[in-house]
Each structure stands twice: as structure tokens, then as C-alpha cells.
Image 1 (cartoon, rainbow, N blue to C red):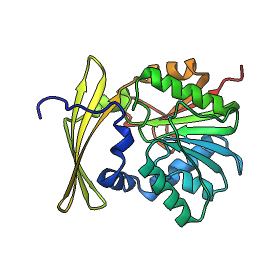
Image 2 (image 1 turned 120 degrees about the vertical axis):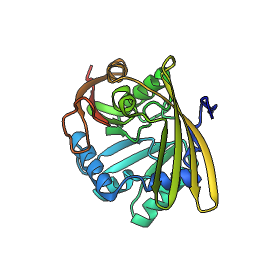
Image 3 (image 1 turned 180 degrees about the horizontal axis):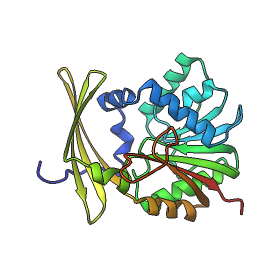
Image 4 (image 1 turned 90 degrees about the horizontal axis):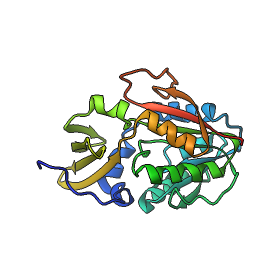
Length: 255
């Protein structure tokens, strides 16, 4: 494979199924999840029973423990398989989750939520125009002064210095091999994945629009947010050069 393979524009609709979903479900340790949940509650300054918007909620990895702590997550995702997994997870944990299959640009809950978070590298699944629409829809759901927490390891500063043409790892008995193709002109990363578990093999292709930190700050500002902080980990360590991930905190403007 000498050139980037083709990927559907809406590749994320079917990516998180089968072996890919199983691997991602095992990618984060319980310790890491606990750190992220603690940062969400603290950075968003949530009170008990506050409704909090979980953008691209996936299988409920963060929404379920937040519900166990007494908050009221409102999870939104486009993947039916992910939402089914989230419902099963919530049922097993004996908590209630409000889950919606919706486009993130279509969030009809004006002023309802006390905070929002958008984690798991999904900032960049779509281009700048669509990302701005998502941020504006999110802002419309938040109360004045409410906060938004973003996370990504796929912004230019956190991705490109560490990008390898080939990646291989194993999680939960699943082997993943990935080939990365970065187009410097379009600033789009195309990744072809091959997942294997025993004799079972699945292949997927994903694309990611690689924004800079400055561009994300501009998208936030243009969508009704004021950037507040940058961190390098869920422990809120200061963000510096050569960090492999970034956490961005922003506040909805009161005007």
C-alpha cells in the first residue's frame, strides 16, 4: 500500500464496531478513566445532579462513572453499536443514562447543561466548518458561564512530532496494525487499520483533520467560547512542547 487508501467521509458511522470497538474498549485503563472522570467533574465545576453533555459518548466509558457519582450525563453519538454498548454498560452498572443518536451539529437542548466534554480524539473527525457547527450547537446547550472540556492527541503539536508510518499494538487479545498517511497539503491524516483476533480479521480506514492549537482556539472563540487553560494530562499538568496530548478548557461567553 504505497498511497493513502480511500475512506468514506462519514467513516466514523461504522468504524466503532466489531474488533475495533473491542480494542478501543480495552485501550484505557481503569486508572486512566478515573483520572479523566475526576478532571471532568473538577474542571467543569459540576454539582451533584448537574446535567453534563457527553459529545461522541461512545460506549459510555465516561458517562457511566459520572452517573455513578450523581451527575446526569446526556450522551450523544451517531454509532448505533456504541450506543447499544453504552446502554448495556449502564444497565450492568445499575445507573440511568440519557442517550441520543444524533449528529453533534443538531443538539436541541438550549441552555440545559451545566457543562460539556468532547474527548477521545474525536475533535477532527470532520473539517473546520463542521467542527465549528458542533461547537456552536454545544454552546447553545450550555448555561452562560458553563465550561467545555476538549481532549485530543491528534492536533498538529501533539501528533506530528510523534507520527510513525506504521504502528502495532495489542489490547485485550486483539492485535492492531495501522499505516498512517499524512497529507501536508490538505493536513489530513488517513489511517488504515487491520485488526486480528485469532482467525478473525477486520480492516477499517479513518481520516482525521489535523488542526493546530491556535486553530482550535480560534474555532472555540468563533463559536461563543473563551479558552481558559491547556493541560498535558488528565492530572492537569501544564502543557509544554513535546506533550503527546492536550486538554483544552473553555467557558461559554456570557454575552
